[in-house]
Length: 284
Image (cartoon, rainbow, N blue to C red; front, side, top):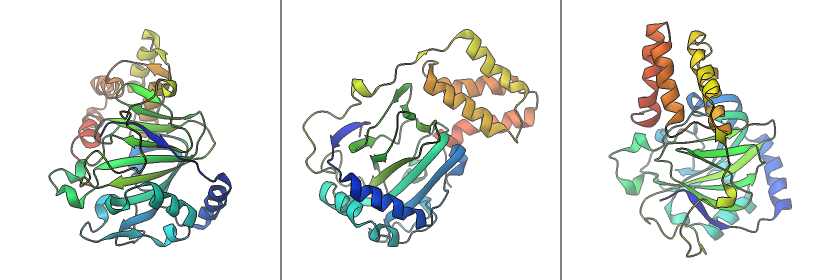
């Protein structure tokens, strides 16, 4: 399924604000922190196999169990009503609230841990519904950077290289829903139009080309990178991706360039292995 806006919902903002305030009492998890650099990235599971909240890492749930609403989902009746009225709940495997601020995700691919698994028992399609957002919240797929707006329903092709960033102290909250592959590419969003799923031109972020001086500055980070600041260095590269157009493959090509220049060859070997972990071969 291609990344793009599918539809837009009329949401009751007063009810949503009330329920989002209630989530302050929830027990959030900080799963997948290896993907995150920054201040805040946390999730709370609202719908899982077996209805258990768990640790938020989707590979850790028993995929043989029937998906159901968790204790936290039960405490958000308006949001769950919105899900039931607008999405094909019979194909939902997971639903969660993702809360971000002042952070960036390392570009990665998802679902790679399920390669070869039976599609009817594993997540295959991902939907985003922004609940609270702001202009500093950005997404990327390959070399495309874009924004999602509140109330819009988006499908995200999580099998392609992608990332997100919340580049301010304002909080971003999205509902993220993972579906099985049983329904194929259609029928997951009720009332969706006939238009092809795509990223609207109005949502694309224009970036000036990365200058030679900026690229050289990024390469110079090889002289200071160590195991303590590695995630910070990766975040600098990822943030630059949202502000400047460095060309196709910019992030990982820049990482490869650092590998060639890092004096500590053991560290360079470790950094060289990150591309495979984030994009190709992840089991945890």
